[in-house]
Image (cartoon, rainbow, N blue to C red):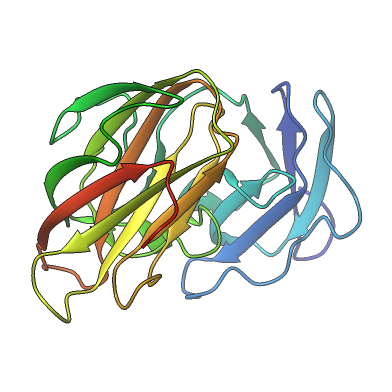
Length: 235
């Protein structure tokens, strides 16, 4: 143990990607607080040591665009210890559940390529679930409650300058959200774009598997509506 009332908590980056942001927050806090790396970067293959007061902490490490690489909850840090980030391709998770892009989609999938017809592609969706998306810290606009499995999957090929994915609720004043994981692993989110309906626009979408979750802003809400996928301008 280190001197005084502090212990050494070391993060070892055994992945092939750099860590740009580290948040270590006492479990009783309802916010992450400041990035503990500051101007430093925890590059692949290196380690970084933090001095902490013994206790229970939540931990989050982010990439360069503040996408959450991994989140751990309720870690007991009472003696000197090392936490190893391997960067393995696992679902992003919290104590309340995960968004599992390896699971079978709730409402099916489609193979689309640039210039697809008919455009837009449409599918009936019901939003909502038990996963608290805000707690996953995926990025700006990522919120609501969604199912663990994706609601819909797009197997994308070819090229396009942009792809727009949006949801229109059947009823008025129903607040849905959208979370998309593209083929490069980047997260795209939106809450209110047109009224309370969400829209995600992906420029130059990479080829591969793209998973879509339609969430509900409020827990326990399940909103029926239509998911649209289009390359066209909106009316």
